[in-house]
Length: 89
Length: 93
Length: 164
Image (cartoon, rainbow over all chains, first blue to last red; front, top):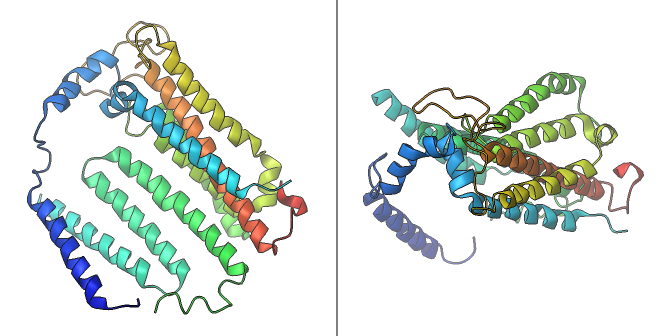
């Protein structure tokens, strides 16, 4: 750690202050501020999509396109690792 | 309910302690093991906050696969003479 | 890489198969219990890493070829995109199998219950496809890191004989 350490201390205090500001405004646990979409999913997901796990029915059906993007991101990561570590012929 | 709060705060303190020791150790293998313990405690915290999906993913990836990858990279670095040139002393000054 | 000691290998031979079966359970019961394709695939990739570390590279590559995992990855992604295109008569990724009877089509009772395996339409199929892709991808990363580590540890020689 070269350089004056007082700079690191100032950044640390400012960062902790911003985090505490965010923690002061947080809503209580289990009570979201706008629960319309949550209530719709909890009430209707089991009868519409016939899956008992509501989280999976959101991830793979209601928001299936995001999961496709996630799978493409994983595929790209594996391709880059293979391009880095392959043997040269 | 008060026992649940005590367990919750104890797990958060243990996460902070293990994250501190991950930076503090001189030996890098100890740091990797400390990161593994931190991931395990984070998965326990996710389970207490009622997110078992994220807890399973964190326990499998953070505590299993990442530790294996770090230890493989560490062995490759040690056997290639990275430690013998004295780089390890300049690392934290 | 020499294999580890006899104690580690014996414990691995007993314990690793439970890990694999638990991962397959998490993938297949993805629409009933917590978990899904990504989590179960990560657990099965942990099983691959356990075998690779305990038994060393030479014996591991006698058992499986590395092309199997890259084939798994491509096959899983293509299957997921294909399931998306099969529902294209309504929208992309439409759940065209649910509540129709037949394969994965039986209705469920509303409310908290244990559920039945033959339900939820394309969600179960997409779970299996994503699980196959994650198994292939994470195992490929682990195996490439292992081969790269051995390449460095043998002094940077080009292509030792027992690499694959």
